[in-house]
Length: 223
Image (tube, rainbow, N blue to C red; front, side, top):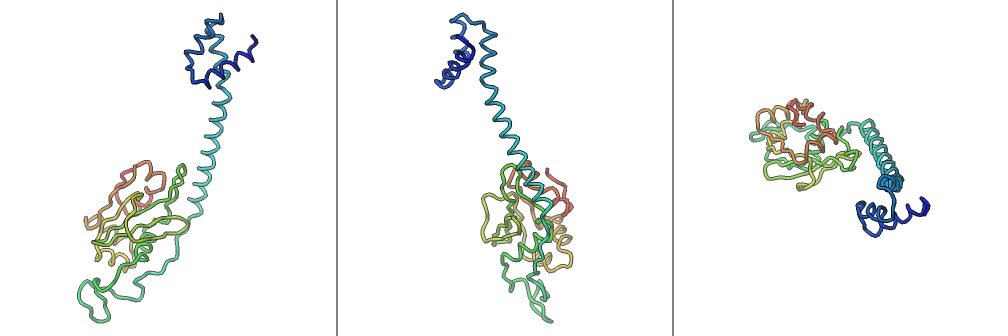
């Protein structure tokens, strides 16, 4: 029996769910040396392994290319400050000041703050293509933001969030109403008034670029 026919029989045996050990035993019963039979099986599997390797290489190349494009094409959005033209106070209104409790928090507040602190630099995971998602819990209000080509914020919490900011309304208002939202929000984190709760694995956070966001807030990175 020639080599081509032997490889064909071995291939059919694999299709019949036989193990490599069983196929080798069959070759030996027919008088073929174990080393020769093993060489045939290795040759039989080589094209499949090469195809799988090529497929994985192509996927990795496309993923990394897309990730590089996403990283270098991201730009900070020009979002209107929702408190623009208003003077906010933590006490009763006076001298045209508006107290915190008279202002309703909307998704625009969260998108603006995230844009200011650098969340626009986050990007998709280059392997899974999942977008970065951040939850915001402000007292009894809940929001989540998804970073795509722009920051989109919705009411409620997402079960797919990467991390969650737990804060309070006065600190949120102070940060948004400040000329330097990053420093004010950072101070709220340092003081413990705002907590950062990790939801995703460290690998997922790293893949989506969260390290730079932590650095912008001057926090020790958990990555």
